[in-house]
Amino acid sequence: MKKLIFPIVLALVVLSFFSCGSTKNVAYFKNADSISLAASKGLFDAKIMPKDLLTITVSTTNPKAAAPFNLTIQDPLRSSGSLTYSQGNLLQYLVDNDGAINFPVVGKVNVAGLTKRECETLLHDKIKPFMAENENPIVTVKMASFKISVLGEVGHPGVFTVETEKMSILQALANAGDLTIYGKRDNVMLVREDANGEKTIHRLNLNDANLINSPYYYLQQNDAIIVEPNKVKAQNSAIGQSTTLMISAVGILTSVASLVVNILRK
Picture 1 (cartoon, helix red, strand yellow):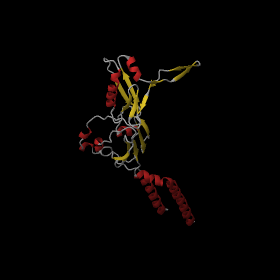
Picture 2 (cartoon, rainbow, N blue to C red):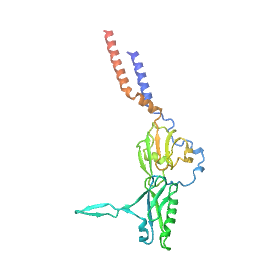
Picture 3 (spheres, rainbow, N blue to C red):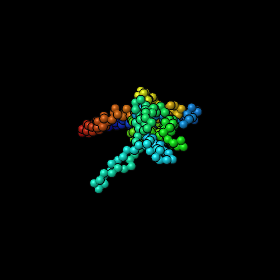
Picture 4 (cartoon, one colour):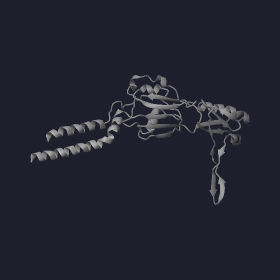
């Protein structure tokens, strides 16, 4: 009977080995104390792209002067059988494939490739001639469709809206619940689409602090982050369906062996 114990224990040890995750390469930015971050200096400004949705507000000292530029969508409301309309929300502007919006009074304005501040300055200059000389309109532009996607080996995959129009890859992963122990930290995939619709794939190493100096540290609208599973997860997936059968087989063999030993003893 003692001879049967060794192979059984060995089988269980092998199963345990494959089911345990490796802790190697788990830490982020392992070389952070040995690199220069001078190249990362500067504030990030997202640039407007085709298919972006913009909310544009024009403010003036005389509200009537700004009214033609602040179009609203009225929402119908029913009360006691009568139809009324709420004040509504500001009309949002979809940037077309040519990178332009059709702004009230002014007409077609090309805004693709501009930062929010540059777009505000451009619209201010377009609007000013239509107002009294003493009016100095304040134009506020906000990207209403800045979203990124995080998929794969993370705690909570999904699509996330970026209210501040600025998000680093670390912030995106934090919003998604961080990588699981099975996620590849040294080979994270970033899928990016430029203003011309061209898609590119970039491989990022979260173990290397030089990522902070990279042009991919801050995300652009519609970026997709994909965290692939490591070898341990792949091995677990490969043996996952057969693990129960193997354990059952070991149990059956143990029972049969015990039965044979008992018979031989008689």
